[in-house]
Image (cartoon, one colour):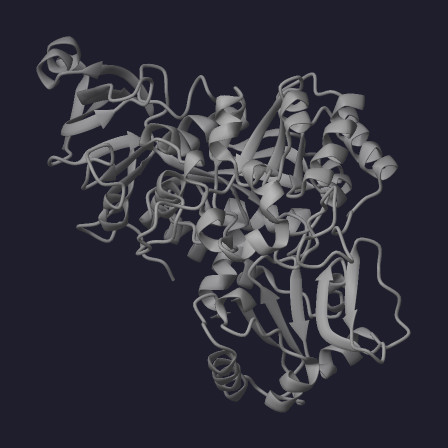
Length: 537
């Protein structure tokens, strides 16, 4: 028996502006599309229910191609500093958090960004000590590649003047060589290792918060990397199975597997592929470098605003090649975090030495490229995970980091697409807002909401069709599901994002005023703006 969805405008996304007025579905799969009358004529004897879209605009279900779902949930339940715009405001918020935290317990906060401050201030440990000496403090930077800690946290971690920088990380020091409390990339692990492990209930709470938030924002799925950080592979996978049960909550979760979690994955009898109809294991995740904000993204030439460094390599070339080879031995593609052009070079070299024969590799972020890299990317089986919202977040300060000469090949989404490369669209939440409409808006306008200029590097603007395609067909192609997801057509899953506006009609700023009416996963309404379908605890 089947379901007829009608009285809407269904954009198939097969071709620009291709649309139909109704869709017929059986067993969670689209059987046919066309007019309401024609579908009733063909399938009326099998029709079980008819759902009136009430004039809504229907798109293939939006999917975030790269984020950290548990981390996004943490941002929702922890102190969020991402919209804090001065050091004094940050101090006040931290002081309030300290007052609400029992003595001796850790104080956590997410998302601080010195580029939001007029003075670009980065707190010193002594300033954090002025807020509290009775609580260890761990404050995650917006990029999640850096953190601020106070003296109590440094002491618990045993970090002193004599502690060497770990491989792939930096302990920032003052002129006397003492740690300032600012830790970059792998150096953050020194403190993380002494933070009490979170329990199963905490992970499930954060994951449910994230899933509910994503459904309300029109996302039917996400490609997420969480399996190494919250008690290990098994405990985190168990949390996904508990929350996304396929009954009360349907959501398509594609899980990347951190390279250090591969052994536990094997020990538990899992491998790449479906775990349940809504949860699947994907590529091996590897970090090649850090982030531009903390100047740890690996560049081929020094940073323009700090010629003393060109970033941090998380792995030397030999080790990176070993990890890619290990993935091939497990019949897995790789998903490599590559922000700087030199990190891309190292990753491509490792992939060229150990090519992917099944599926597609993924290069994540791809914020700085060059002409040689573009040519080499065309010759490997790869999808590029880009985050359009980074343009809105990182400009104009990123121009100081990179300098004028590198800008034409930086955040160059249009150049990537015009080179024939497949791109998928994500948010990297909690680094950026998970709302796909903000990502689409950034891809089309290349500016922050409310700004009136023509956009940062405006020649790299995408069309609305290209932008939406990132979050539909692009995300499907990244995980080898392009024949069953990302399009409204016969044989594709019945996953829909229903909006109250036609994104193709007029001003791209309309995306900022658009509301999600429904989110449909597997032919099931998981969010309805007019009624609370699922209650988040």
